[in-house]
Image (cartoon, rainbow over all chains, first blue to last red; front, side):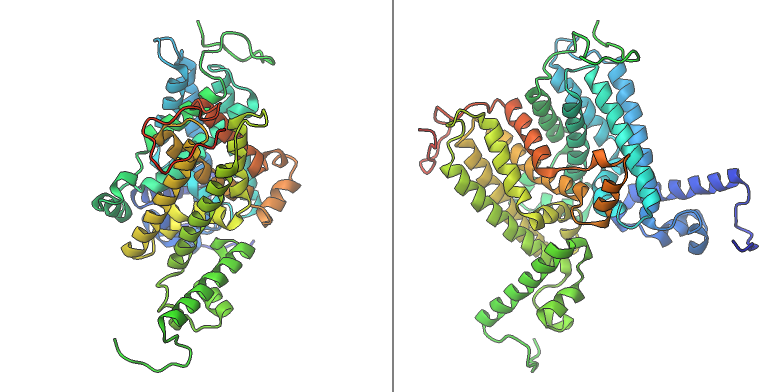
Length: 242
Length: 242
């Protein structure tokens, strides 16, 4: 590598991490405001006060930046869902554990609009214009976090591992798809709402997703709390049922 | 409008319809081969043997072309599902009506790879770069066809209208999302399959979608055939149960 002198270059590993975090923060801020689709590499460079060419030393493409945010989004959502499931005792208040679990999943996703946008963009766009190293790193994170959420679900409601995987896949994929259909804050949404023939087709993500996930959990027989140890219980698993 | 003389311009309404159909056919062929994402307006113009500027008299943007294909895809899929549901007697062979209905939906979608690709692209990209007239026309078609499939489902398995709507929405949105994740025939798919840490995460769309839709139908209580008239049966509805 040729040594170049440039005042804006971060020299130490720590300075590089700070710069990288600033790029990711700027991209997240812009995408939250305008949607991922609208944000260019130039927009991000401008927001973070770097030359585009300098930014390319940190991330090769805009897709790589958003794929990193998608990985971080999976980790953050997974942590929150597992935290809430660990404290929850579904059915304890006499309510339907399927409804409670579905609402927890749906609401935690809807509360993260950028993650919903990323979930729809990831398989279609973000994995397609990055190095295999970047795809691999993202994919391993997403698979591990989806697995962790699935395992946490299984401690609360009785599901097989593939069923838990399908609940997580449906929750995240439908959150992404319904979020795009709902198109909150966009011209498209305002057009839908203004047209009497289309207004009834406007999607309200949280209740719609809660309903679908409730039925899915019921269909898998997850209508009661876990009251017996799962067949292959690991030592680190904790029953949340009293 | 200024009268211009151009040898390639279609003059009669019928000639215009023929030209329009040729553009749509070329776009469908290219997108089936390479995926919607890769197909540009120039590719389509080249394939159909027109100048790009001449093609813009028929469709304003590439998104408008694909949105028209998405509308046609909804109509064609809806017709096929309704035809098969009209002939089906779920549960007649002693099988689970939820499984049979789910498999019919999943397989009819997977058999239409271009429609699956369109389903994922529509809310995210295709509705965003077209006139409100084009969005409105597509949306009315999609809403009507989704409603027709929902009504046909309700003649076979007991579902409320909103439940039937959610089954259709989940079937089509998950088909779109899982198709993008599976990425069949792409570099991405070959990379997944070649990596031992990722190979197990490769999505097989038809069985995965069948499993999810089976659970959803069961969760809505659709585990038996319709054996009593729906509450608000319309005169044109026909029971398929014997």
